[in-house]
Amino acid sequence: MMARIYPLIILFLFSSCISEERKLENLFDDHWQYSLTTNPLFATNQGEHQFNDRLPASNLSALEQQYEDDREFQYRLNVIDRSSLSEEDQLNYDIFSVQLENSIRAYEQNNHLLPLNGWWDYHAVIADLPNRVPLDNVEDYENYISRLGQFDDYNSGYIERMKKGLEEGVVRPKAVFDDYLASIEANIKEDVSERALFEPFENFPERINEEDRGRLKESAESVLSEIVMPEFLRLRNFLRDEYIPNSADEIGISNIEGGEEYYQFLIEQFTTLDLTPGEIHQTGLDEVERIRNEMMEIIEEVGFGDDFDGFVNFLRTDPQFYAETPEELMKETAFVLKKMDGQLPELFNTLPRLPYGIMEVPDHLAPRTATAYYSRGAADGSRAGFYAVNTHDLDSRPLYEVEALSLHEAVPGHHLQIALQQELEDLPKFRTVAGFTAYTEGWALYSERLGLEVGFYEDPYSNFGRLSYEMWRALRLVVDTGMHSKGWSRDESIDFMADNSALSLHNIRSEVNRYIFWPGQALAYKMGEIKIRELRQMSEEEIGNDFDIREFHDVVLLSGSVPLSVLEENVRIWINE
Image (cartoon, rainbow, N blue to C red; front, side, top):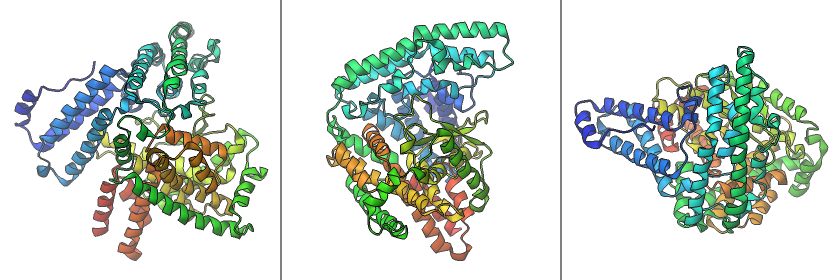
């Protein structure tokens, strides 16, 4: 059952007897426990295992209740006298307020009626469940089977929300569903032994005896055959027969009911900045021009004169730039990361304890997902972070991009930042998991450039790959706002990206689909990176010869993920000190 909140009158009488600091602390504790209870998958990832046998409630009534609960939490926050709090607690208050406001506004904007974004959609999370839960003993396996057995209710809740979206005209566009069903069908196997979800029962830990193995295996076969596989089929059939035929013809989110207001909300949520689509579009055009000029310098250097298209065609077609096997691509990736591991002390005072590994993107996701992604490790240290490399369609995974991509996803990018945040001990729990996209993705993009300072990108092609990745994020500002605010078509967006980058056409098409599917999210990368670079330049100019890059990085990282306005204030305080 979901945690309940004190009735407001009782809350008022109780709270009048305690200090404002204690009220805030109690509020944070209550909300943390509420988050663990209402999202058991999140709890497991945080090392809280009392809910390991459950999936979250996903239906409309549960989300309405969570909305009401958020409003009550907001009321409790608003009655606290912020001015009487310490400076540190005022910051905690403000960040918590932003998170609550985002959650409340998202529900009011019908965000819950658009549960698919083409990234880690709920069915993909279930398919990846063996990599997200402990499987060390009999109880762990029983919990895993219990979760699989709840997939019918979990799936029903999401389908209910999408049906409501169809009724309200709040739907995703047809254009992004060309190959979407394949990500579901990859999990539908007649033979139980071929199902990825059954793999844990083929490789038990030694501590589990033969009798328990047989019992658990039989139970898993039953649940997978009678519940999980039929539910994957039901989802596939619902999307194929009902949702996709009735989805939107126009690709821009502004075309749905209330879409313009919704897109503005998404901009503010993902960038943490009060900017219009037009302002972001112009920033993107300016960045595209700047980066294009830097690219042309390299093109001239390697003997192509001013022939941008000719050079890009050379990069896209010459075999020297492509791995012949998945193993070769993984080895190149591992070499880059091991090299960067040795350079981290030059850039950072504080490094995380949690290790990271590399893995191939699972087969059921690889054909339609990004070039790579990072999966955070468990907060209790029981599972490392993982950088997943897409080895599908090797002709679209150029080696000259490996350095920039790896620094972004692993170190000093996502793994270093997220693992450090999880290990911060002097912050309220909610701040160790806060995820402001402009901060986390802005940091990862900024991290790509850090390679220039410690001996990476010595090859002009690799440096062009770095610039191509920076261009990619600048193009997002133009294309995302173009499609969702200015009426751009999918083909116009693809052509604009192809004309201004060395990205493969396969990647460009996948990326444009992603921006259609997930409006606003792609704006966070470049806007966050621009702010971090601005703050570094300001620090270097103000502090002069005493500027220490490692101290600057401590200031940026050791408050965790924060809105960009908070990050700027933290840096200004450090400069003044």
